[in-house]
Length: 138
Image (cartoon, rainbow, N blue to C red; front, side, top):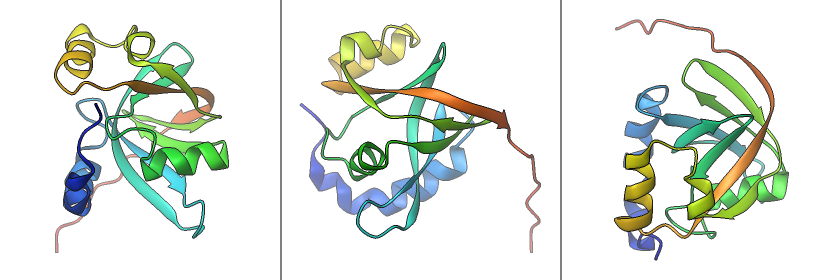
């Protein structure tokens, strides 16, 4: 069963914290375009690179806005670690198949604790290093 949708009201706070952690702990910054608004969004996701693909668990199910947006667009961008990736059309796979290339602890948690049903596999179309910038404090 996917995580409860009621957690959605905390999404903005979670996203702000998650985006700051992007590049660490397998947290990625997923950049996608709204299917209705055309607005560019940044969503923190737990992503794993497996060969020439990136795998993301659908913890909130197929109704997740970010998933619907990339499924409609057929492409998205992601900052994963020190790489900027352009990703192709998403492919839904069962969690057992999706977690095959992940570290075992994440696969175990997704299957047995979070009880995720599906994962998304995204082919890597292009990659480049992320330009490292320092944030200045006011």
